[in-house]
Picture 1 (cartoon, rainbow, N blue to C red):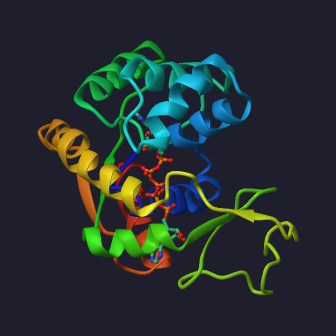
Picture 2 (spheres, rainbow, N blue to C red):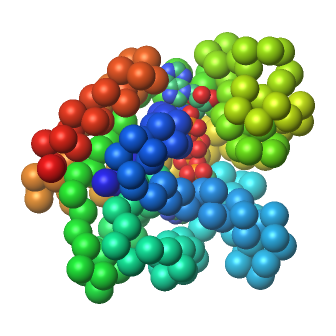
Amino acid sequence: MILIGPPGSGKGTQAQRLEQRIGAVHLSTGELLRDEIAAESPLGKTAATYMNAGRLVPDQVAVKVVVDHMDRGDPDADYILDGFPRTTIQAEELDRILGERGLEVGKAVEIYIEDDVLKERLTGRFACVKCGEGYHKSFKRPEIEDVCDKCGSIEFDVRSDDTEETIRTRLGIYHVETAPILPYYENRGLLVKVDGEKSVSDVTKEIELILADVG
Ligand code: AP5
């Protein structure tokens, strides 16, 4: 399954919730690239210049992190792709990558949502440094103030690309470069749309119903 949606639409939130429920691997290109940056690898150094400006990394870089991750993993795994593909070239490359592994896209789920709601979500977002659990200052605070619900850590951080200016750039790029891939899946009868302004659990339920249909 592919999750397609603008920054802040809830792709990561839903993928995290679904991966255990449906037994699939959550593959987030954003997370993999942030890992490369943290490791100060050559690929991470290239990616950082694009990501800090809110721009897409070059297609070949995004494709490389996906292929490397799949090559390291279980060849029989099912995947929830979060943030990939993001351009028409990446969508075509994905078909090639999956084809080589005897896999195919089951569903492409578009999470749609108004830009104003997204800005509020992204400017309030923070995450646990230790386990990565995501929070929001208005919508999802830790049950005990400043203590991670999942691992008990007291260290949190804010993503460096969640500034107002970068969020504007990321939203613009979504509309210009990523939204055009939607017809690629619609024309093949693979695209389904989910209202991302519903509650987190309602969105999960909708996606689960869609996946039940795939079988
Ligand atoms: P990436 O990490 O993929 O970021 P993004 O697409 O900008 O998406 P986000 O992670 O910001 O949002 P999300 O949709 O996952 O929402 P979330 O669940 O966190 O990519 C980062 C960068 O890496 C890109 O800009 C690019 O530079 C590069 N990159 C990555 N992939 C690439 C590719 N394929 N090609 C080229 N470059 C690539 O939710 C947001 C907030 O809202 C959270 O606080 C959450 O708690 C809250 N929330 C979620 N759902 C709900 C709900 N239903 N109701 C209320 N609050 C909610």
